[in-house]
Length: 280
Image 1 (cartoon, rainbow, N blue to C red):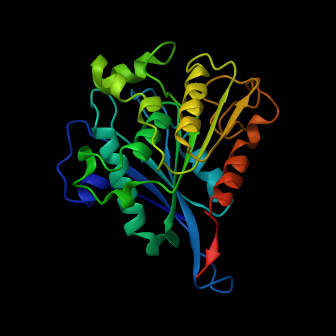
Image 2: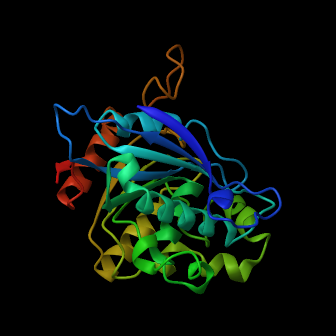
């Protein structure tokens, strides 16, 4: 498996905003010819967290490796953070979706099987991508069907902009525009034509209270969206893959014993939604 990084602004001939991100790390799979000359794999766009202040490395390559070991082709977006404001991050995620679908042949992926998985503030970005794919903010990038993910994974997401939440994420995203922050609350953006959603968090997350995921689950249910919700009993914020790839073996975080299995549970859900390795 090879890796390369693509500057999305340069690739699409766009002028980047000041202090722009838009760097897409790509893992390139090579299926042995004796296995199949026509293998196609699902792809996953990974959106790390970081409060829209930075892009977490703990939720980048370790997550990509967990998906890759199951045969998926991962892409990790280093998106713009503060002082960059909305919709810069949404546009970069949309550019990433377009790039992944347009280059499916080179990556041995199926362009009709592209999931998006986000963590914390990256979960918020993931949620906006799955609900705002047909908005004017991204209409010039690609048609809505290109930008809409085929499945969604939301990991301890910053989901609601009101009440007990992670206010700093919305502050960084909107520059303190309270009206815009409320408009970007995911519980208000949920729509029936969203992709299937795998949602998880922990009961005692001290940074992004679990009410974020609980309220989002209620909104998904009310809208009739296909989803599953895992509320694990115990574990701090930012667990990422919840294994030695992302924590110290000398001082591992305390967590419920079923938390480290979330990637496989998510992949099972995605498979039930039709995202599987196949031969053409």
